[in-house]
Amino acid sequence: MDIEIRRPTGGDTIELHRFFRTVIVDTYRKEGIGDQVDDLEEEIKTKEYYLATDLATNGRDRYFLVAVTGERIVGSIEFGPASSLIRECTDGELSGLLEVGTVFVHPEFQQKGIGNLLFASIVGVLRDKGIEECCLDSGYRNAQKIWKKKFGVPHYVLKDYWGEGFDHMIWRVDVR
Image (cartoon, rainbow, N blue to C red):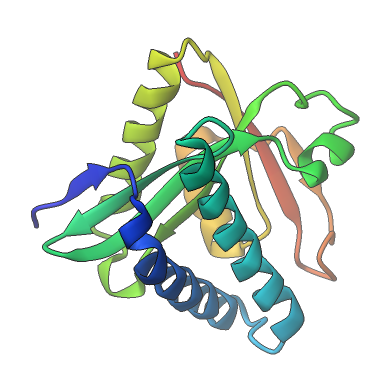
């Protein structure tokens, strides 16, 4: 599969909004939380806001990369300031770090290495900017499995944060 990793443009906005909705709805369904419509819609709006921030600041305040095959966007990743959840739940320990997030791969293209390619690409950008550490988090069990395999035991585990059996995990990652 021929995958191009690039910065998004304003012309990608509509497609990325559809992409976010597709991936987030699929994720909620697979996690067994598809009935949490308000949370799902808030998650989508947050990702759309992050994209708008990137485009408005040319990557200064948020920085996205997208994975494209042909004319189709099949993946995304971004970084920006650590979220309030990360800042508050780590008592400010990770406040100064950038957070890598919005690591999404279209359901039809998952398990093909696109997420790893996106992550390696964003790490390259962070290194080029002189960043040595970042953080990332997840409340999705499927994503947590991937991050545990990639980064080991999370630095923080917020037991039952999203309800019984739904922990939230936070990793501190050395990108050197």
